[in-house]
Image 1 (tube, one colour):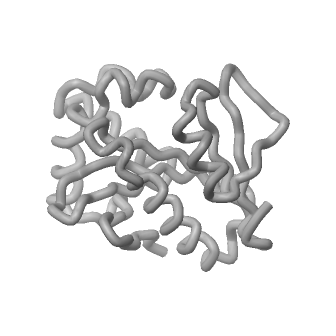
Image 2 (tube, helix red, strand yellow):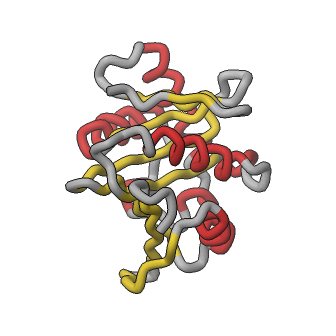
Length: 170
């Protein structure tokens, strides 16, 4: 089932093997500009070095084998970020990023609120789990604002937050 949805300012499109070549190309050419040092500073190594279309194509192919990938588009069809979903049992582990020029505009809140609404209709997911670097204060505040609950576990400077979809809160 395709996980695409829209919010007031975002068009969120799942990218997979059935996506159009236009969507794949649009994402591929946008990735080097999105993956600036500030955006990828606290992300895993496989986000580093995506500075060409060839590197972006390779990265995209790898990601499509690893997770569900959703492209975030503005109202003007610009690629503004990504949402990643890794399914494990009945949990959806999520990650998201926005291009630097879109920080501080409430788009991450809008994205996650829209995704929570969509995820609550997916009976196979019980929890959303978000990992965030402990230095990423804006994302930590965002997750708390959306009623994600901090978990006791912490790994290599990563904090984990859960949202219980069955109850609608933790």
